[in-house]
Structures are given as structure tokens and as C-alpha cells.
Image 1: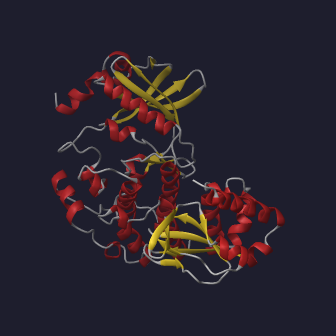
Image 2: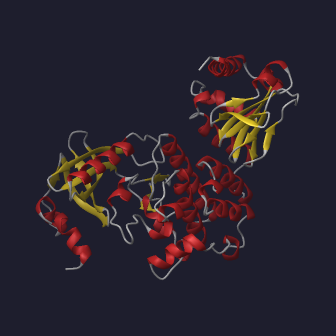
Image 3: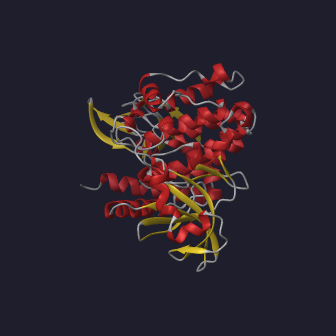
Length: 431
């Protein structure tokens, strides 16, 4: 028996033995009745199961629990994934431990994985591939804002349902249950970020690196960092740059080469600082391919994002459409000055992605995060700006002028100024 077989052996005994060998007798774990085996990997076995309480089919992932610590970690990761509720994330319904194994019950997706479209002979049209990656961006951005990092983004963890919607599965649990393959590193070699290989702290930028690898593969039909073995793959990730995507697919728009290069930068600080910033550039690429009508789809993408920002939580969807269709949106590179002291205008900026810093007399006096605004003095009174504002990271900004606000319906203007006033009160209140 091989090492792999030995590790998997516990799954083929007890409650699972009949199913493994084709017996039609229904077995159970927890309250779930196992119907059939869907697949297996290093992280465990996935079954199609029936939940008799809710009366629905679920995907039941079962992993061997060697220690009490493993059980605790597994349930913690499952709890983190379970609080995610997004159309591009596979829903987690339940998790538990029983005897020598742990299980997690998830939404059953009757479809395929993105892995089946990563070979040259099975590639999707570029426009369809970008639509899928945009779905992934939205799901990941939501998870990151909820404080959950996936850590194992790869084509086999992207499911495509019958309608073609992409859904991310295995948040945290896959990474935690995968066996180490070399030097204590966990995960799938071809999609690991440099900081994961180095054993450093992971961040949302780690998922962005992995997503960049997926984007490259689903467009080119080959991996950006090939290698004859795990050592070769890891060396290439740490020390080499992938072949330009345009050298493989000359018909693709040039912006895609820029998107891939930026998402695969070795330093996390040089990558996209959010998945929505990456999504914005992917939308530009998709329009250049000719799939999207420019204004309509831009507004839709922006509305989806705005509705998850604290500033716009009490806006209705149709109100956000009205606002987004008239506002301006700009990309600002990290280090660039956005507003200068003494400048006179009537523009307010809301940070949709990234982070900026407020400078006075050469000293940093405040940091402005995503969902916050700056330029309130200029907007209210047309007074000279009293400080400099510099993009600390790459930013996407929503630009609002006094003239625009006057043209908006009264209800939207009221909501805008009410939320604007809340920010002012918070900033002016003593610490």
C-alpha cells in the first residue's frame, strides 16, 4: 500500500466502506445519508449526501482527524467559511466531528470545475474566461472584507454551476487539511504566492497572486510557473517571470498582460490591493474584447461593489444605479498626490479601493481607508483645501462634485449628505 493509500485507508472503513465498493446500502455520518462518492483528494473525500432535516442534497467533505488540535482547527476554519454568504461563494451549511474524522456540509453544485477548461484543447473563449474570473474577484473581495483569506485558490476550487456562475469552494479548510508536500509548505505548488513559500504572513494579496495564476492558465492553457517537480515550480515562482501572455495569445488585449503582471508581482505591496481593483481592469479588458457594452456593465459592476461599502449601505439598488451612472471613477497609482493644499475646487472623493494618507506640513496626520471620503471642506464651501492627500496604495476613487449633487433626486441627495455628516461628526469628535 502506498503512502497515499495508507492515509486514505480510514475513509474506506466503517460507515463508508459499502459506498466505496459500490454497495447501494445508504450509510450515514452525522445526520447526513451518504448517496455516492463525488471525488477525493489530499484533503479528503467528497460525497453527495442527503440532509433529512432540511430535505436537500449536500456535498459532504470528510477529512481524517488525527488529533484533537486538528478537529479544533477544522471546525474553526469551517465556522469562518460558514459566515460567508455571497452568490460566488459555495455556501457552508454545517460542520462536525465524529469518531476519527471531521465533516463539512456544503452547497451541492451540479456542474464542473474550472480545471476542465485549463487545457489548450478545452479553453473557453477569452470573454467567457474573463467573466468567470470577474465572478471570482467578487467572491474573494467579499470574503476578504469579512476577514477570510482562502489561501488555496486554484482551478479545481472554482465550481461552475448549470447557469455558468462561478463559485469558490474550500475556504480555509482545503489549505488546513492538505498534507504538506515539501519543507512544511501547504497548498498546491503552482498557485502558491512567494510569501506562502517563504512562510510569511498571508494577506488578501496572496489570493490575488493565486488568482493571477488561474487567470493566466485559463487564458493560455498552460501554467505561468511550470517545473519538472515541486522544487522547480517553487524556484520559478520565487525567481522568474512568466512568459508574456501576449506571446502565447497574440489576439488578447494588451491590458490583460498588464493585469497578469501586476497580480503576479513578487512583493504583495506591488500587486493589486483589492480584488475589485483587479476586477476594474478586467472589465476594461472585457470591453475591449467587445463582450460588454461600456457604460451599462461598468455601472453594474460599480453598483455591486458600492452596495457593500459602509457609506452606501442604506442606499437602494436603483439609487446607486442613478448615482453611479452620473459620477466619475478614476484610478490613482500609489504615491500619486490626489488633492493639494491650497487647491480650490468643489470635489469630494470616496475611496472605493485602496488607502490614502493625509499630509500636513510634510507630516502624516491621518489615514483614509476604503469606504471613507475626503474633500468635504472643498465640497461644502468651495474653500481651499487645508491638507495634501496622497494615495498610499493604488486606489479607485469615486469623484463627486457639488454640481452633480444638485442634479440628483432629492432622496439620493438626502442620503448622501446624511452619511457625509456622520463622517464629519466622527472626525470632529474628540478622541
